[in-house]
Length: 184
Image 1 (cartoon, rainbow, N blue to C red):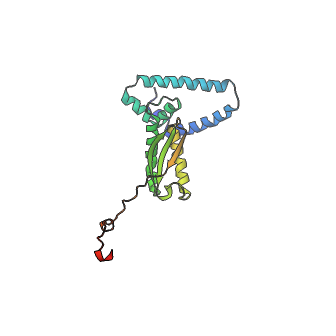
Image 2: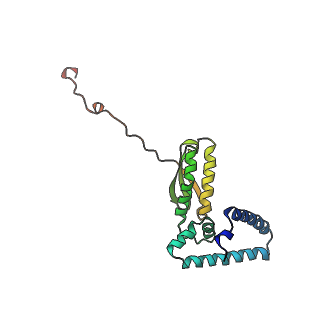
Image 3: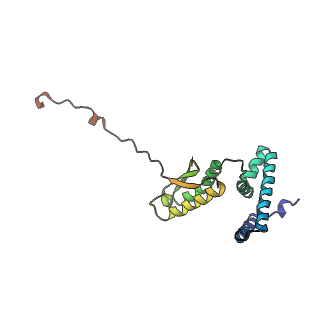
């Protein structure tokens, strides 16, 4: 068994995943045994991973799900133990500091059917009609949410709820003033 020092660092994993995407893209147009072998191997590895989760106690299940690479594999095989809404909310929270640095704010608003909803406000991340920066933020939010919760169909930016300040009405305007008798 390889120890942690012999394992791939995250950049090496990312490089291999990028190369794998290239190779798979080349195979997609060529039906045959190679593509079938990849599909079958993926199914078997997914089943093996599901069996590991079945045997794991809750703290280990959570640690496995929290690992970025393993979490993506659990999502890929549709066996992630955490509901998609929680994963999506966590992805939004991870982006929130970057949005705040740009003078905006980002808030999780929940799921409606299969649509994730977020509130985007203020600064360059203020939503519709606020300049080009918000499109970049919306794109980043969509990518982050759908990467961790692909079972959701889309991400919708909702307008922040605005509550009007209570109107001040002076008491003197509400009270009827007595009209003098001679003015009637």
